[in-house]
Length: 467
Image (cartoon, rainbow, N blue to C red; front, side, top):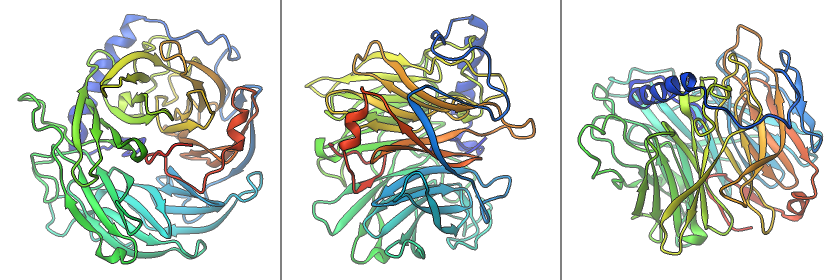
């Protein structure tokens, strides 16, 4: 299995969650429940690497993976944006792309610093990488380490990106059970930022992830002196879980919405809603479960008004073909919840891409974020080999796809691919394809064209701000 902000890990700490996912997938395949109608898509499965897209979506550029990220396991992962630059994580490190001309992007730096899965975020002159696998040490020259070794390291790496062509490694912070993903949370003043670190666990026979692990880690970063970054809190979110449900703790993703003093966490078997008025002491407001349909609660996205939350389910851990007619439309999908004035989550509907994929294509809901259309709730999202989907959930009970881009199956010797993340940034959609590199897509549709007027200086998908 992959370990990912989108993919998931092959280590024991996710074993219970993946078993649950398989158990949900098996009866779904046997049930014959229909998927949504694929009427809007061409008939049949695309040929190997064949590109298909809706008339309102156009591929305008692609930057392939290149050395040093050209090995068989150098998979592209998550993205962040700042000014004219896109930062794309990779299991081998990260790439800085100049996207000042979106139709002619170019790589200006490729930083070799291996560690699964190297999910990335940026804040001012700082870049943060999540490492969720034991390494022999915290340097970029480290090797994969023994999780039982006393010196095994995993957690957050901090870089100085004031010179985009020459990022400089500054500091590491070891965090309990590593860092699968993280979200940037502003401090009470501009001098401090916090990282909410999500990671699975526990693993009894390790030095860094012993039971219980029912918490997240909060890293404090002094902006003027990032070398003093440190863990300042480890709040428990699941202390009240019933006995027997502690096999997989921690969270996969937490998305924060500081303007609303809220955060939503996708925590493997649960969705959680948090009050983050005090960023160092978040308060649990509600836990929701969907044992019939969801197995690996993967990520969360607020709408712009903060009145809805979309939770996604990464059924099968990113490796399974769940976009089949035999798999229910409510499995491996998105669930839309409304957020009441009393700050309670109420489920309203589900969304799954309406285009049937082949049994050779890993396909499931993955990383996405809002398309900033004033007055509407529109999201763009990666679905691995299901491609990139733009969908409207303004009517929460009846969401619908309005645009898509996808490639056909990979060659038979490759079993993992497609869009890890897809985000809208300053007029274009950027997709981090696991094996194909960075795709740049243009969306031309009267329903979404108002988003082209929204200009951002920075975008971290897990740190939402009102547009």
